Figure 1 (cartoon, rainbow, N blue to C red):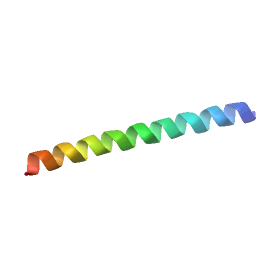
Figure 2 (cartoon, rainbow, N blue to C red):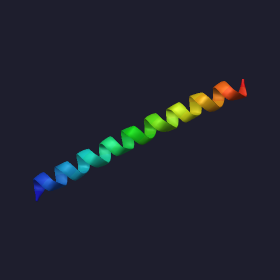
Figure 3 (cartoon, helix red, strand yellow):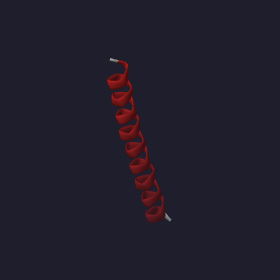
Length: 35
């Protein structure tokens, strides 16, 4: 039970990090296109 919980937490953390990186890339592209 605890192991499954830790795995779920790890997957969630990885998803959040990936989403943050994608948002960062989109932000840089938007800034690049604006200026």
